[in-house]
Amino acid sequence: MIKAVIVEDESLIARELENKIGLVAPDVQVIDVLPSLKTAKKWFMQNAEPDLLFMDIQLSDGVSFELFDHFQLSCPVIFTTAYDEYAIRAFRVNGVDYLLKPVDMEELKNAIGKCRKVIESSTPSSFQIKDLMQVLQHPQSPGSLYKEKFIVSIRNNWIPVQTKDIACFTRDNLNYLYTFTGDKYILDYATLEEVEELLDPKIFYRANRQSIIHTDSIQSVKPHENQKLTITLKAPLKMEVDISREKAPAFKKWFDR
Image 1: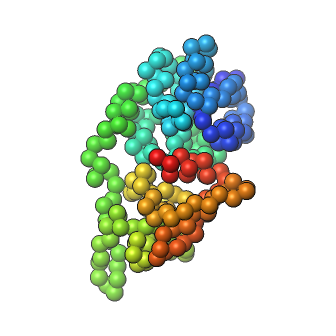
Image 2 (image 1 turned 30 degrees about the horizontal axis):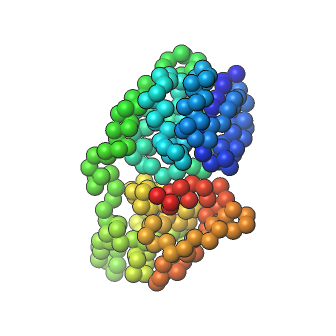
Image 3 (image 1 turned 90 degrees about the vertical axis):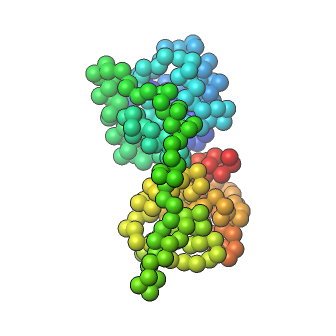
């Protein structure tokens, strides 16, 4: 039995992650859920490290990487993140597993599978947490990481649209972009996933399967009793975008920065 600990400050997300772990990996036993950096520090002072760690990056009282400044942890780690593309790129370079919220079952299964091999081979984790922190805090050449403009075609002419002028991207049979002034253009991309990879996640948020929104395009956010959210975009768009109950906590954390 693999003993795991979850470090996550959103109780709903932590509970859903634990349930999903039980479904895709019955041999993984979650022995504790730690809701804050302070709680995690206290826990690791009093307990031996688990076989596997699931860690949210941004906690309510700090960044989970701080744990590595205080404890020599060698167990494999699966990081979870709502939006931080800098972290994702660093994880890829250093071979660290990560999951985007809301957690996909198949991705979770694959990530646990990779960590299981590390545990069974007794090979220590190879990532360098200090290098990861450096990338997060001092990203190099941000202009080269994200797309600065999109080229759209109008009457056989190519027109550049600056990314900073784009209020949202939507999917409706075809993919479209809308500018803050209300202009609408067809995008020459097959999926919104491709577009999402090109955008700065601190500025753009994948609200649902049909929409990616700019933080400055948001006029208001209305919470519902079922914990879903409805976002109204600013005029002239005045478009309504729904956020699911599962994504609502992650969106709030992204928006409230």
